[in-house]
Image 1 (cartoon, helix red, strand yellow):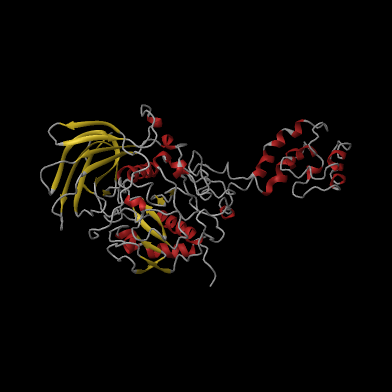
Image 2 (cartoon, helix red, strand yellow; image 1 turned 60 degrees about the vertical axis):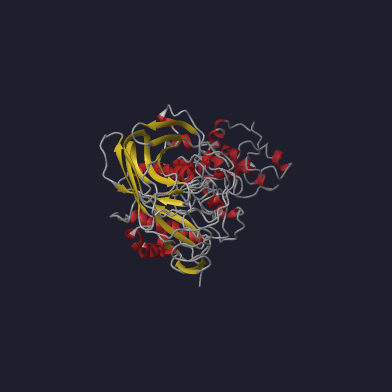
Length: 548
């Protein structure tokens, strides 16, 4: 547990009102006030198929300064829970335990501890007046009742002020799509989570969050991966239907799309083109065949042959399954970074695909000069989740980080689940050096990757999860020419409980959260696996280490 942090707070008026009070109910006999708050754009919530994520809170009031207790209380539906308090600079030392009732089973769980160790970002984002101190959120699955107890411990003589229980209903993923604002756009103002996978290789918009990266294995992005040459694969069906020379779209010279037609080319394709009288038309303008729409007529050369589907095979057909992310570096980096050309990227589920409610994000992302290190975390929730629930867990954490912590967006840059699926975290472009909020003191140099689950209390990271973290880290560091098996010296930007402000820290380029900040994260089991993960990253096909 880190020591109490003392920081100058610079209150500022938030750009928008986050808390939308939907109702206040005093629970009889409990001394607890229930407040329902909802974030994001909305939806009526009447249709479960389009239910937006919502946050509900219970104020933990009481006369005893050292403890708060909440008896078993019926609540609105929630799946993720934590506790929060007014002053984010107050690093609470004590225990917080909760138990919940399953909405379907009707049974109560055992008591579970909430973990502490979240620290607000060391930037203006962390100094905003809306920012609160909070525990790590705990995924409990669909629940409709809760019981809680919080006890001050250590040097603490009282529980924090304005203590409350925060319960998150992650909603349905359909409710979060297509609701973008500033946070849902990359540095070039292009959407990277606006209702379609971020898989447009030639544009640089999160091009690396690509193709077929959904947990279910669906081919989410291959249909969008081909660039402009993909058009010939659709047009051939029209041309063979008319063998007449009537379509005067320069059919003869377009026979050879791989070469730029010249004024002399009509002589070559003429033998295969029945309308020998038409080549005179394109010869009048040698540049006419150049536009990309001319290849759409090339199938007229031989309607009976399958050649039309083969001629454009150089790109349209293999593109979806080949290297969908080999071209992101073609677009300028909004951060001004001049990192090496991007290698192929691992499959990443985009924010649009996991259902991020982009209306929660008020401000656009900020960028680092480059990524020098990757910090590995765990969500400290539960390992008893189905991978089909991973997207809902990430949606819940987004809502918690914004509505409970008061941050601008989700803190981590990426998530990985136990099945090895990778999810895009904070908006701004997975192939960009987006500044996150995950490792206090070192957010200005690094990317944060969080593994869903608890690896401090018996959980063991799966082989698939470890390989996914290794591949993702190798790729992310490789974008900036950083060796995943090397070390780097960074300057602490705050008192972290491990390093003082301004102190030089020599860290592995793939480190655990506890290496930079006083916390148990990422848990003993995952931390012990980091040497193996570094080795796998160094051998990864996504590694792009500079030659020595």
